[in-house]
Image (cartoon, rainbow, N blue to C red; front, top):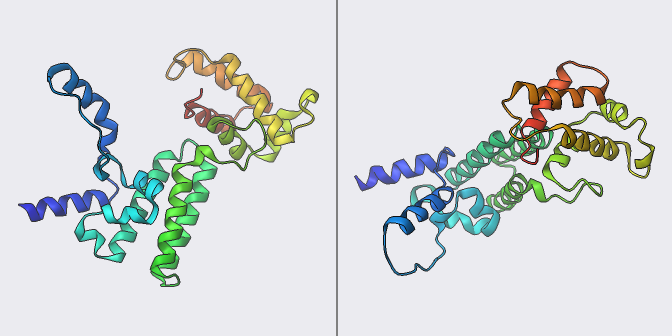
Length: 239
């Protein structure tokens, strides 16, 4: 029984299907505080409190030590476990910023190819996969954007608007002439969305239509790109 429990845990972790207990902690703590009387608990750090991705972001290569024995003892299994978890995160976050996560997916594919062709040493592979994992997880703290492009929503618009769309949106906004065209377009579109969106607009056909109309008015046309940008906007927590 112990053997198969370990196998189950290793398969869950390696497939990226491991349940992150940290996300359930507030609800469990509420139940404990409400129905169980005990002395104040002392929070002690444990690897089980964090998912593999978060462990890698915080502890880097040392996170490998938190993997089950059956995975940790095999370099190939370690690599595939990390890759599967990074891939799952990329897929989960793709709708938030397609261009950025497509780039991350390409970098992951290239790194996997290097590993399988044995064109990179295991130690160098670990260093690079840790760096890539941090890029995927901490995309919202990137600093390679112009001033005022400081939130994940604005960054997503900045990455995903085409040059032609930026030119169409930025026309007639001389007050923002000091900013580059793409930055101007993002700020104009961001303000337009903020001005028309109403509370609980997602899922409400009429309220969604107002947001979509604001996008269409700035682009000067309707069509697939309006729909694509609307879906992008819909996936931003800021809106």
